Structure formats: structure tokens, C-alpha cells
Length: 390
Ligand code: FAD
Ligand code: NA
Image (cartoon, rainbow, N blue to C red; front, side):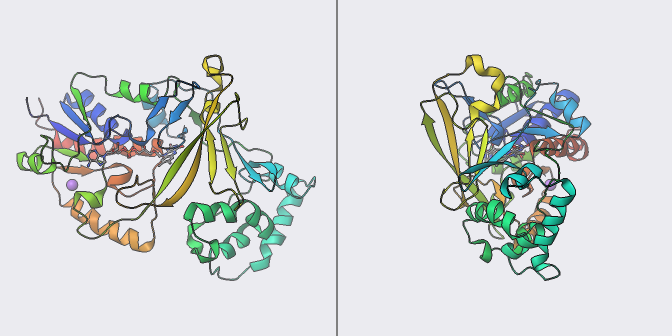
């Protein structure tokens, strides 16, 4: 058929946002390809028939933003539930609220400290290593919140995230450890939060419900046997938005950017509710996973449609990613940042190709940030490439 005005590589939120804008604002015919068999990128979810849970296939996704433009934009395609994110942690046989707050502190010390007393206690405990240069993550954690709370809630959890003893981890991994001296355990501080009322996938399908936008799934941009491949499209001069890994685009010519990934282990229980909350962290070393997600509990408004006798839980195991793993969190050492800067120079010289999203720019972005950067990238970089479209 006809050559599209724009090819978008990756049907994640970056690619879908740019495609939606290009069709609506420039009248462009956009073709989206994705190597996976579904749209939505890492925000994709599906309904679990047995339990009625909406499973977030690539890990728990909570939408939150304080950005008015993004909030107005996403509300064009979905409404949001009243879900408010809260997290709990199991430590030494007890369940505590997170992030560390006055409730956590008073439960941990079996006390009834006032905010001022708790603040004074933490300062005193953090004073153990005051004024020293932290040699590793352990020292840094102790310096930030004192040894007792650090060792109970941060040390082993972080060790499991990195599969490395915190004494061997660089202090730079943790910049700050927030402690709240109130009982507020609302996880996000943003103006708006919630979950898409009909699920993530329905939201994202509506973004591209435009006849000018077409999608091919199961298609790898680097597979030269299919029509929308890098070589053919570059030769034809078709504008491209690329949201895959930036090092892969350049055939890893400068080396591999490093990522962490997460493996999920699914467990099903013969009960309606296993944890009583959607996210349970496990702070101790004896439980091998970092946290467990009970998806039903993200959508309490759907209780009537959920199975009262069965529930599904995903346990999360974190590890370093190889080339064939799903890249989730950029490791972002100084060496990675320097390598990315060199790839970004190559990308800037690649005329007619816009690199975007978390893989294309080697950045951890939340969904609202990816949508914000996509709206800006459309205005600044993609729209000029579509100037010829009638
Ligand atoms: P992606 O969603 O990764 O989309 C990129 C797409 O490109 C993928 O579908 C991929 O298959 C495709 N692709 C790659 N290479 C090729 C190729 N060669 N050919 C064709 N297609 C290709 N954000 C929040 O706001 N709240 C949260 O609670 C939250 N939790 C998260 C939890 C986890 C475990 C992770 C990993 C992320 C989380 N995020 C969260 C972030 C959120 O997932 C991202 O902001 C968003 O999905 C990024 O969109 P994207 O389009 O940049 O990338
Ligand atoms: Na470019």
C-alpha cells in the first residue's frame, strides 16, 4: 500500500501519544509497529479470567501526575478510579506502613513519639556517622535515617533489588530516604492519581482509534524481511519515531547500556484476598523476592465482578538484565551516562529519526513523564518532519 507519513517504532505510551498527535494535528497517516503481540508497551494489562484481576503484565503501574497538560490529555481517553496508592512492608513478623512515617516509627519502637520527638530520635540515630563520607550504601543509609530503621526497612530490600550486599553497593544509589513525621502514608504526593476505569489497554486503544493510524504487531524494526524495517525506511526517507533501545538502533556499536529487569512468579491462592492490600514489600533477607503484587486489590470498585474465592499474586525478583531480557530500570552509573551521551550524539545526527521514550533516551520515566516528553517531542521534533503532509 501507500507509504505512511510517519512510522512509529514501539506502541508504548510515547509512541501512541506521538501517533495520536500526528494524526489529529497534522492529519498524518501513521503506521505503528511493535515487536510484541500487543499495544501499550510496559503499561499493557490483561484481565485474568479466573480471578477477575487486571494483571499489569510488566509490573504494577499506578498513574499519578501534577502536570495539568498531561492530566487533561489522558482524560480525553479514559476516566480514572479513586484509587490511592499505599504500600505496606512485612518485617520480622509484623506489617508496617510505608513510606517510613510516624506510624512506622511508633510501631517499630513501640512508642508514642510526637512528630518532634520522632524527628529528634532519627537525627540522633543518624548522627552515628554524621560528617563522614559514606563509603558504601550501608553507611549512606545509616547517615540518612539511622541504623535501626535503615537495617529494618531499607538494607535487605535494596540488597535484593540489586542482588548485591549493600556494603558492596555505591553510596550514590540512594540520594535521600524520605521519612514523614506524620501518619500520612499516601504514597504519591501528586495532585491527581487513579487507575484507568476500564483498564490500561482500553485507554491506550482509544488513543489510536483513528482510521489514519494503523498498527502491525509482532514486527521487529530490525527484521529486514518485513516491510517496515530500518534499512528500507531510511532508504525511502520516511520520518521515524523510534522508542526501542538506543544502543540497539546503532547495533551496539559503542557498547551496551546496562539495565535491571524483574522476573515475576505467579502464585494463586484459594481465598478472596491474600494480603488485604495491593502491594506488600518484604524487607527481610529470608524472603527471596522484593515485593508481591495482589492485582485484585488495585480495583476494589470491581469487587462484585471478581472471584470471591480465588486471588492471584505476582512475586517480584529483581536482577541485572542481559540483551534478551526486558530492560526495566536503567542502571545509570557514571559510565552508563557517558555512554548514553555518546549514543545521543549519534541520534542527533540521524536526521529524520526522533528518539524517544524510556528505551530511546535511556531514562527511567513514569507514564506521566513519558506522555509529557512525547507531547513536547511532537511539537519540537516530529511536527517539523510532517510539514509536507497535506
Ligand atoms: P515502552 O512502554 O517500553 O514501549 C516501547 C515499545 O517499543 C515496547 O512495546 C517494545 O516492544 C517496542 N520495541 C522495542 N524494540 C522494538 C523493535 N526493535 N521493533 C519493534 N518494537 C520495538 N510508570 C508510572 O507512571 N507508574 C508506575 O507505577 C510505573 N511502574 C512501573 C513498573 C515497572 C516494572 C516498569 C518497568 C515501569 C513502570 N512505569 C511506571 C514506567 C512506565 O512503564 C513507562 O513510563 C512507560 O511504559 C514508558 O513508555 P515508552 O513508550 O517509553 O516505553
Ligand atoms: Na535524530
